[in-house]
Amino acid sequence: MEQLRNLPPVAWLLIGAAALVGFLTFWAWSWYSGYRARKTLYAAVTAGAADHLSDSLVPDGMGGSFHVDFLLLTLRGVVVIDLRNVKGNIFGGDQMAEWTVIDGARRFTFTNPQGALYDRIAAVKAIAGDVPVEGRIVFTRRGRFPKGLPKWTLMLDALRAEFPAADFESPADTIARFREGWQSLRDAVKPSSMGRRAR
Image (cartoon, rainbow, N blue to C red; front, side):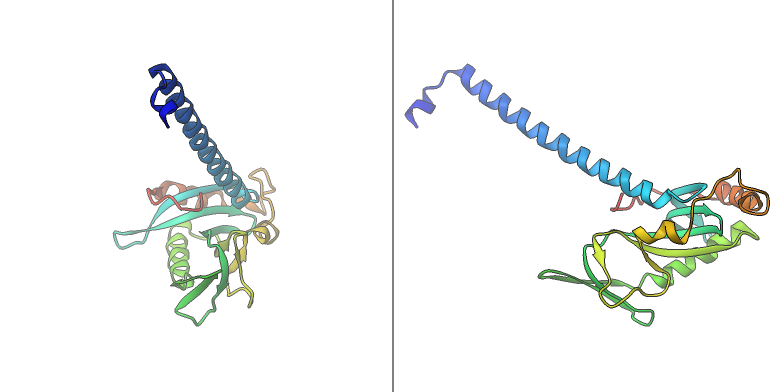
């Protein structure tokens, strides 16, 4: 201790600088790791879409709006994506008001997201005209459904298999017929400040 107290000011300055560099390196690496994870997740959700919108406010027709995580233009029409980045075993069902998550000693519930998904689908349909609109609640790999998946629920790895890759240059009898409705949707939505925790 006596030796530490007798260190010259320059030594303390060097120690402080080393500590600051260590802290900044740790912070930068944590930020970059999170950024890379969000970018990978974003790419996984949008991989099969010809076009997409993220973090959008969709008018509800009554002066309000719904936050939508992703809108995907696919070969089957528009898909409304409610993205969930929940860690642990998830127990949910179509008739359950709340779904339960168990992650080790931690246990919590959240409101069944199916009802909110139906509202978002209806709002998108009102704008997109004749374009078919579907919706999915997509969970990342951090979650598991030991008792099976509820209706309209998908794991992220299955999303692209259910909605194969699409292309705006496809023949007229496929995705090109959705162009007008999709453009109406793009024109109607606004950016949402409710950025999702998953991205």
